[in-house]
Length: 485
Ligand code: AMP
Image (cartoon, rainbow, N blue to C red; front, side, top):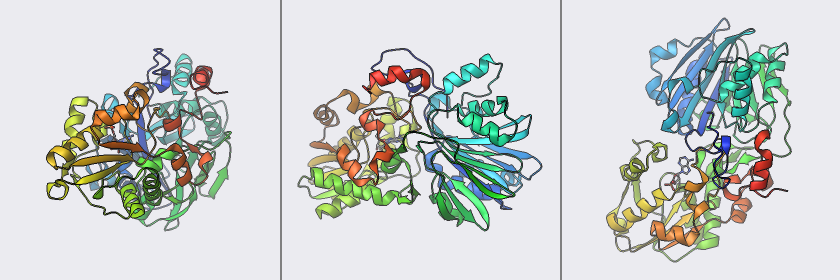
C-alpha cells in the first residue's frame, strides 16, 4: 500500500488521496503460526498468491526469540532460494506479495515492514488501500515520526508505536480504529500472529489449519497448495490473536455495512479460490457469462475468451447459448500482466507479446469474444485488430462480463484515474467505434447483482460511483461529488 499524492485539481477527475493512478497496489498476504516449517509454508502460499502482486515479495519469521526478514523486488520463485529460506527459522511467519505500478517500485516499499519499538519487534503485511493514510502520515510527521517508505502500511506501524495504550493488543486496536479504507492485515511479533480485516471487509482473508498449525491467507488457493483445510473467513471487523493460548477472536471494529470487493470475483482472485463466505470464484465467473448471454446474445459461429481473464465467463456464455467454445487466442504465459507496464507505448506492444490469434480457426468466421473488463480500452482495441487482421475473422463482437468501469478503486484494485477510464468519458457506442468491434455489450449492473449472493454486501463503486467509505477530511467533498444524501 502506498501514499498517493494530494492534488486539488478538478472535482471531475476527483480527488486527493484517491486520485493518482501511480500508486495503487493490490497485494497478497499469508501467515503461519505453529509450524516448524513456517517460512517454507509462507513461501508456498505466496507462490499461489503470485497473481495478487508481482513487483516484490517478502517473508518475516520468528523463532520466538527474534524476527528474521528476507525481501526483494521480483517474483516469489526468483527471490527465495533454499539458502534464503534457511535464513528464516522458526514456527511463525508472515509473507507478502506486492503489486504496484512501476512509478513506485522500490525495495523499501516491499513488505512485510519490520520494526523494533518499545514492546519488542513487530512485522506487518497489508492488503488494501487506506483512504486516510496521507492525513495520518502528516499528523504523525508533525509529532516527530520519521518514515522509511512511502507505503501507507507504515502509518499503521507508527500508530501502534505511538499509542498511549499499554499492551500490544490495545495499541493495535487503538491504531486500527484510526484507519479508514481497506485492510486485510497480518501482524506478527516474536510470539504472536494477528489477523485483522477492516469492518467493511473489502479484501478477502481466510483462516485454515495445517498439521495443527494455523494458516491465514488472502485466498484459499494458498491453502490448497500447502494442504491446509479452510476453516472460515476472518470476519469483517474481526481481529484474531493466535498465540500459545490458541486462537482468540475480538470484534473491535464496526462499519455501517459490508463492502466486499465485487471485482475480486470479476477479475482479481484466482478462479480456484473460495472467497467472501466460501464462494467459488470460477462458479461466479461462469454465472456472469451466462447472465451476459441472457442479456446480449448475437448469432455467431463460436465464442472465444480473452485468456486467462475471460475464460470462465466465456465457458458460461457458450453453455447458456449452446454454441461452441474455442480457444482463438493463445496466451504466452511467460510474460507478466501487460497492465503493470506504465507507458502506453509499451502497453500496446504488450498485448501482442502476450496473445496471438489462431488463424486456421478464425478465418472468415463471425466470433464473439469475452473479456472480464475494459479499463482504458487499449487491450480490446489491440485484440480486435489482431483477430481481424492476424486471424482473418469476418465479424468480432465483444462482450464484457462486468458493467462499464466508470470509477477508480480507492480500496486496493489497480485502476487509472477517472479520466483515463474509457467508460467514464465515452458512450458505449463511442467505445465500440474506438475499439472497432462489430458490436459491444457489457453485463448490466442489475445482472451482476443477480449473480452475486447478498448483493447489498458488495462494493460496486467502480461500476456505480457509490463509494462506501471516504477519508474523514474528504467526506463532504466526496459526498457532494457523488450526489450522496
Ligand atoms: P485496458 O487495456 O486498459 O482496457 O485493460 C483491460 C484489460 O486489463 C482486461 O483484459 C482486464 O482483464 C485487465 N484488467 C482489468 N483490471 C485490471 C487490474 N486492476 N489489473 C490488471 N489488469 C486488469
